[in-house]
Amino acid sequence: MDAITKERLIKLAEEEIPIHKFLGLKVATLEQDFIRVEVPYRSDFVGDIRKNRWHGGIIATIMDSVGGAIGVANFKTPDDSLATIDLRIDYLRGAKAKPLTVEGKLVRMGNRIMVTKMKAFQETVLVAEGKGVYNFIRS
Image (cartoon, rainbow, N blue to C red):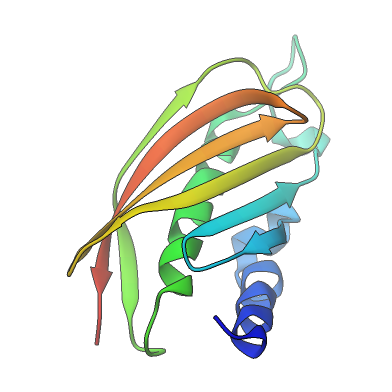
């Protein structure tokens, strides 16, 4: 991926997709088969008010976005598209009131199906991992 395309995709991810902008998502690394994003903690992301932990749905949303971003990085034309078919998340421990780093890796790119694996970390502690399957449509 050339530098201009990478810059355009990072701007798209951070500033033009409303949910990403709401989350404060920032792209740290972007390649065609790998992405790393960082999301700052906010008190309105809390799901467990007793322990002040991130809501699992917020984590799942970020992980789905990371999987989808790998697909977008593999578009050949602006008319290509993708949609989530299946998303599985395993929550390994409660995510504390700290920033979240999520990484995604391309597992397989078929003619119509794309598979990604994602991991969510806080510092070096793995808090969730998952797999996304996407319908990938080339125009």
